[in-house]
Length: 339
Image (cartoon, rainbow, N blue to C red; front, side):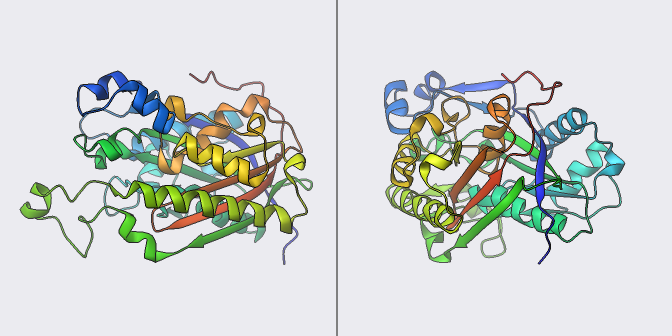
């Protein structure tokens, strides 16, 4: 087994300027600002508007910012992985398109589709590629334009999701900091509870699938809520136990930003006090594969070299994952302004 660790050496994000507030949603569906805040903790979401602007547009902005912050030239990047469930097209991959938009050429680039768990799946793949000794600089992107697959007449889903992108740079670690351990899990039996029925090879697009609104996210909220809490808490505890960690040893817990009540429950079950939990769902909603890198971006100024981080997520599939990271750097001087 290789002794090379992969360290996150930079993080950046990008959010579309247009906002969809709870007040806007009150005009679209039978809901209220108070109900949305109480049930989800969300106040607003960022929405990417404009014809011909897909997930790659957000990924491009996040990657360009990341390269600038870290002083990395496009030709130095050895691989780019994009976690997304809303690709620009079925093919080519959104990672290919991002590379073209930022001037990265002649490297392996591909998408990872694991819904909300996609970023941690992609991070684990990238870290193992660094550990192989073959690759020196890998960009991992988490990006989703959820507004493109949301039915804004469905109160159960339209209040939850937003658009956004985050990106990290992975490089070989010079010490014991970096991605220390990960656990990735899935259970395909959960597909019935959270899916988009049409648009794939099983149900290709037809007039009937469009008119019956089968190209939007479908979710059985109660079942997803139950499984998310249970699996995120269990996998976080399992990861901590096998690395000899307790809640007091963790500086930051970074959970997937799906629902504030889920976040609160998982943190409590994992024995981590809320003052150590990153929460930005109120500003962004659930941006799917982008939630975890956006948290790291928002909290970058509060992270210190050697901090122990546990990241946990749960998504459609079902998929779920947890990753243990020792943070590798202090906040860079060229940290960009965030909101």
